[in-house]
Image (cartoon, rainbow, N blue to C red; front, side, top):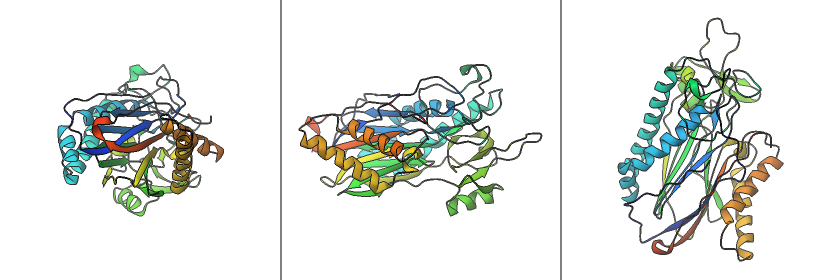
Length: 354
């Protein structure tokens, strides 16, 4: 699903990168279900661009809720707008962290009212492979069909906010943002997994346990008396996930990077779920997008570059053997006068196993 908002009272810089933003080309069916779907949301104006990648696990209702609540919070946060517009990195970081905390607290409060059991991940009960999702809707027992509980799921969240020549990236989970600067990949986020030493130490200090299963480090949820299985997740930060949040094993605090964009050097930004990054390296992805953009320019095409690049990354991940949900956003910066610029947005997904 794509969500586009127009915001008033924005003040463009004298020169800024005019983005051409494209989300991927395939779309999952909407509806709350046990199986993870994929989604991305985007908000654009002449001077403000917000993208979000929400990769759900154990169900899709947390991601549904988060994609609407997070982007709504950012759209209304004038402190964030002022911080970015004024080049104040500290204010920007504080505002984004507050937005993540608020959305997570509201989501957990809603999940607490659900009278249902945790939803199993697709094809593997209680062992949280996480994917993406699609469509805005608060989590509630009534939103699912009988036999499809939704209350104890969670989602990663990667949000980018660009105002003029300043870009902020906030990430909780293992989606990733990579900038192309003079042809080189510059990673702007950190993958939050239990394999990271700092994350593992934090989890263990909270009384948690990290194990290696199916080749990946996973945090175990506290054992439930009488349960025959134990939930495990391969991410260490998320929104939702009440079974892990109750004892502080997972947290929602994002890492926030604030990056001045450099005219003529910064060409595009890739934001994607781990369905891409699990098999495709940062520089490999940047090189693939650069080839597509060069081909579009050589053909004299005026539009569609970002969409073509997103399609190329989806195909690259699938050709490499990815069977996870793949969600990609490609933002192409066209440097020029703000008064003559504009933006174009589109949305879609590549669901698991397609």
